[in-house]
Amino acid sequence: MTTVTRAYVSRLAGLTVFDPNGDRVGKVRDAVVALRMGTACPRVLGLVVEVVARRRIFVPMGRVTAIDPGAVMLASGTLNLKRFEQRAGETLVLGELLDRSVQILESGKPAHVVDAGIEQTRTGDWQLSKLAVQEPGRLGRRGQLHTVAWDEVSGLALPQTGQGAETLIATYRELNAADMAHALQELPIKRRHEVAEAMDDERLADVLGELPEADQVVILGTLQERRAADVLEEMDPDDAADLLAELSNVDRNRLLELMEPDEAEPVRQLLKYSEDTAGGMMTSEPVILAPDATIAEALARVREPELTPSLASQVYVCRPPSATPTGRYLGLAHIQRLLREPPSSLVSGILDDLEPLRPETPLAEVTHYFATYNLVAAPVVDAQGRLVGAVSVDDVLDHLLPDDWRERARRG
Image (cartoon, rainbow, N blue to C red; front, side):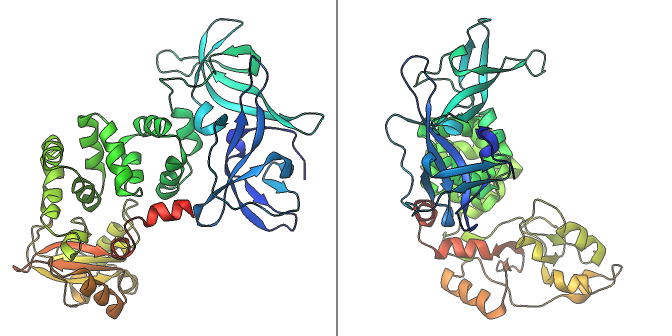
C-alpha cells in the first residue's frame, strides 16, 4: 500500500474512508479549502465525507493519516457526525472551484479549471498547490491542457459570475440520480442552478424526480420555458404531473402548451386525478402487450433499460390500442411466470386475472391491495375496462412518507 502526499481532488471523490480499525466510515465527496490573501496557496481544511443516510460531515485534514490510491485512512478518535455546514471563508473545491474561468499569466490565454491538486507540506499540513486548466477548444476539439501552480493563474477571487459546470458534472457522472440530487442540494444555490443548466435534458429530468417538490419548482423556474418543457417531456409522466401540479394554473398550462402534444396528453390525463388516489400515483406508460404477443416478446420488452425494476416486474395484456387508455384490459403476467414458460407460448395463455385498481381508489386501499397480494406494481383500469396506467410500489411509498422525507434524509 502506497501512501500519497499529492492527489487531485476529482480522484479523491468517491474514495472510501476507513477508521483505524479498518471499518468503513463513508465516501469522500469534496474538499474544503480556505483561500488566502495574494497568491498564497489555499490551505486544505478538511474533507466532506458522506456517511450513513447520505449525511455529509466534515473531517479535518488533521485526522487524515494516509491517502492511498483506493482509500483514505483516519486517525483514531471520535468523529463529529454533525451535518456539514459551509462557513464563511470556506470554499468547496469540486463545488465552487471547478469550471472557474481563469487567465494563465505566462501566456495571457483564458482557460477553465478542470481539477485541483493538493499536497502535504513538510509540517504535515495540506495545501492546494496545483491546478489543471484547459484552454478553450476550436472546431469541437478539446483545448490544450496545462498543469500550473496556484500562483500562475489569475481570476480565482470569489465570487465570480458565469461559472460553468461541465467538469463538476463529469466528476459526478458515476452517481445515480438519487445521489446526484443529494449532491446538488449540498451546493450553493447559485452553483446548483449552474449545474442544472449544464445538465442534458434526460439527466436533469432523472435528477429532478429525486428532489423535494419545492426544489423541483425552483430549478424548473430558473430554466428558459422552452428548456423547461423539454425537461418535462423527458420525465416520467407521473413525475411531470406531480411537478406541474405545484405550479400556478397559468404556468402549468403554458408549459403544457410548449410540450409536444403526444408527450403532454398523458400528463394532462394524470393531472385530472387527486394525488392521493391510484390515478394520481400511477404512470401511464407500463409495459403493454397485445393478446398475440409471445413470451419471448414480453421478455424482450422488460429488458428495456429505461424501465424501473417495479415496472419491469410484469406486463399487461390488452386489446388494441396499446397506448393508454387501451382497449379492453385482459390481465397481467409476472416476470417469474414468464421465465418458466416456453418462449414461443402466448402471454395471454398465462394471465393472472387479479382484480385491478380503479383510478379513484384511495391511498389507504391501494396500500392494503399491495400488501395483500405481495405486489410491486398493479394495474389501474377505468369504468370502461380500459387500462389507464399502473401504480408501482415506489410511488406508494413516496405518498406514504412525509412530504419532506427527502429533505429529512439529506439533513440526516
